[in-house]
Length: 71
Image (cartoon, rainbow, N blue to C red):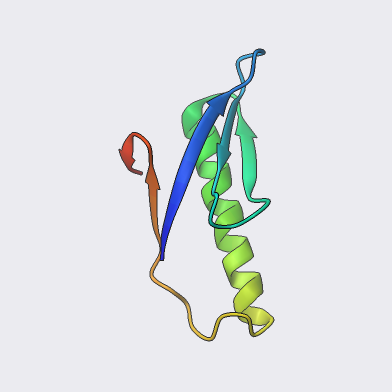
């Protein structure tokens, strides 16, 4: 499972990271790296929840990829 991470920056300087393949998975950070770490953790929680609820039958191989290359 390849998950793309997209970034944007608010006018106040905060970074927003989003995983479009998982609707609603987005996180803020003071830095790009902090936003990336937060959104990766949230994405993994969502995947774990889907496994627990039977929406996924096995743990997929997960690769996060940002617009700046592999993260």
